[in-house]
Image 1 (tube, rainbow, N blue to C red):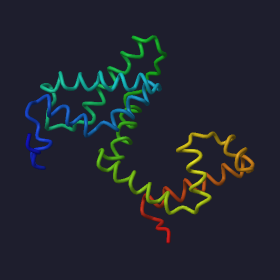
Image 2 (cartoon, rainbow, N blue to C red):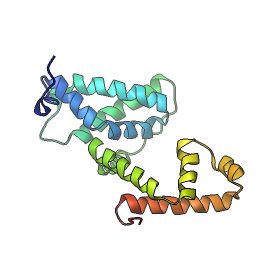
Image 3 (cartoon, rainbow, N blue to C red):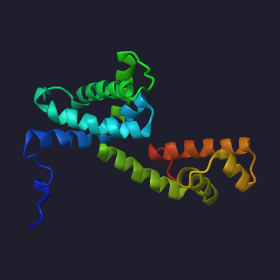
Image 4 (spheres, rainbow, N blue to C red):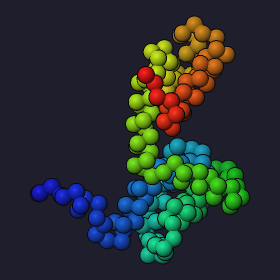
Amino acid sequence: MMPLENSDRLQPSSPQDEAFLQVLAHHTMLRAYILAIVRDVHLAEDTLSDTTLAIIHSWHRFDRRQSFAPWARAIARHIALANLRKFHRPTVELDEDVMEAVGMQIDAMGGEAALEERRQQLRWCVQKLPENSRALVQLRYFDGQSYVEIARSTGRNIVALYKAFSRIHEVLAKCVKGAWLPS
């Protein structure tokens, strides 16, 4: 089989393909939105799968003059609430305005390409941290240690550790936004 040319790679051949590509482009947004509703990682993954199928099956009703994200979030919210009821989980019905505000904040993060660009920037910024700060980031975010475990293993008191992470988070946030470029 011959490799596809770049221009042929993501060309939808059917309406269902087009719907799937839209879901793929908005995967992170939909997952975060669903997780905000169901508050359970496993149920969120199941709900995202259900949402993907629902979007594909109802694609013919999508008005392409409108934005995909709000339409997809409405479907995701409906399915998430149904799944919470189905599995006898408590539901917290937030105002439609609140859920739309959450959705808009998630949209502001950008699509998958923008998120990957920020991930790459964050990796670069972490590498530019001083060695002791990188070690703390490694322990907390890659090794999954709690603050108490890190305090114990590094001999720091917990208050000092919280302050150190606060500074690290601030530096990383500035770096990712391009406001801090380490030398």
